[in-house]
Image (cartoon, rainbow, N blue to C red):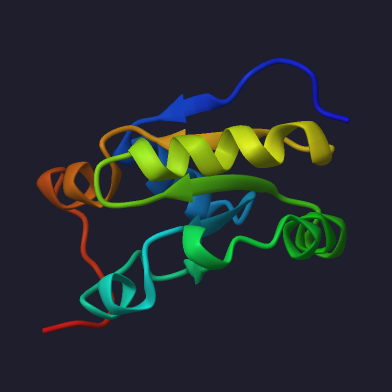
Length: 112
């Protein structure tokens, strides 16, 4: 499947990719964390219930690359590496996670 390694993006780069509809954002935080606020288009697939076959199906259906996010980028990097050998698309990690997204001035959906 995919050869190489996980790529990294900065928040402003991810914002552009989302606008171009070329990526599917996978938020690997737990449901309670996701509920406090998440990137608007993100799908919540927590690491505690990680489903690689579902992600493979998702990439086949949507023909997009996958971007993984979490709070600071560590859990998402692990998840991205776990998926990398199983998909035929780019696998990307958001540098600094949700914290860098909000520091970059980007909004979250949901939460208070």
